[in-house]
Length: 153
Image (cartoon, rainbow, N blue to C red; front, side, top):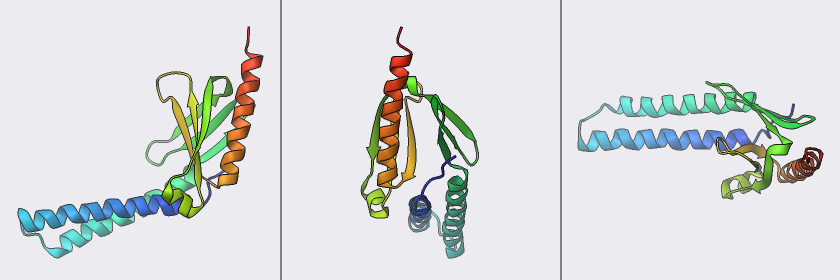
């Protein structure tokens, strides 16, 4: 089983920090517009949000695994709810590599696998180096084409 690149934790922690800051802004708005809150309440809410976000991001990284099996891409992930996903290569429609500005700054990319079907029609593998993402994308394409010819009637 493969793990994600450790820098993905930085992205997830940054998102948690933004969420904690948003909570702080909400508490500041409540304090200035509706009800005077003690400063300790606002600071405490932001601190708790930040700590919980960091713990969640680290735990999420520890739980994220993926593997190319004989006939499928297998993923394990989740903190509160653990999810196991198996994407049969025969169901793969196309594969993309994505890297937004923050991911590029961290030297990371994601592989998105689009599958046949309507429910959860795509699966994302985040936190890969660009070279690993391209290699995974190429491998998935090849395996999808091979499985398509093997399943042909």
